[in-house]
Image (cartoon, rainbow, N blue to C red; front, side, top):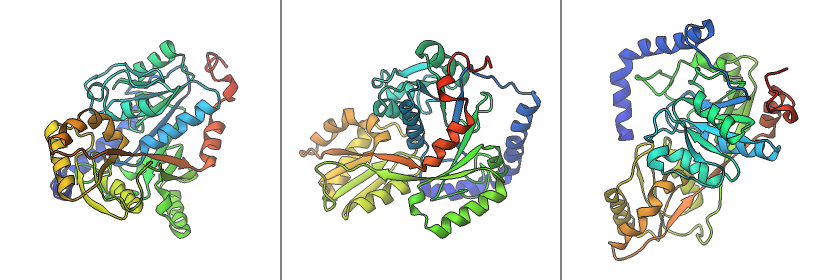
Length: 359
């Protein structure tokens, strides 16, 4: 979908927002009252999710938290829906912690990207997150379940609910879908155990304080943490290299801004919808535009790279010149206090295991 059309679509959908908003207010109430079933896994579950449509830097933070658990000597598994894949309810093993064993077409791009970047951390996908978590526990001996994009998945009980807001677009349009990009009314923020502001490197001290004050009104007494997004240097690519950037992610503007901060010459850019499935035609068009613009290489995200690497050389070879495809990797750097908070909400980490619910 063309991002330029979103304001018009939101405008057309605005009359229906109150109805959708009402439904999303009723869901948590129905789960609390037991009208809708919530299942519990026999291991701690930490959910990381968001309240807006589009990107909030969720995947990098999921990986950062998973790596932290691994450093504590715990067996953590990431459980994700596998959006954009064809696996359905699952569960499907994406990785045992040694790289992806399934394609992005089946598992979705984000699960495969996480599987390729996290060594020693299994990834399981499926829309039925309870069964996916049970699989991770029974088959992979996971001690901790890290639920990716789980804020609205109330069918699975969680021990810690972490909500992400992007510093670039805190509350999005401020209106609930389909009249805006909020998945739920802003009152849902109070459901979180903690709030993390991603991309916080763009905030100054005054903005950080203003953000804290706003969230203290919406979610009193909830701890707020800040997480910076850091870029990993690309070897053999200096800042003056003319590049062409493309992506298919929820927040393409953030990616293009980071590219502009890294290279002085951005010869062109192209955005596709989130989770876009690339065809050879798409790759040919990207290669043609990049060559015409005089770029020396093409840059994309790690999420997109898992879907295009295999066909890139075929497309560029047709142009008579092969442009290198470079992967622009980012990582989340949350405040250490976030990990202190997580640790404080769980039983002693050395006791997390088979006896978790035995008291």
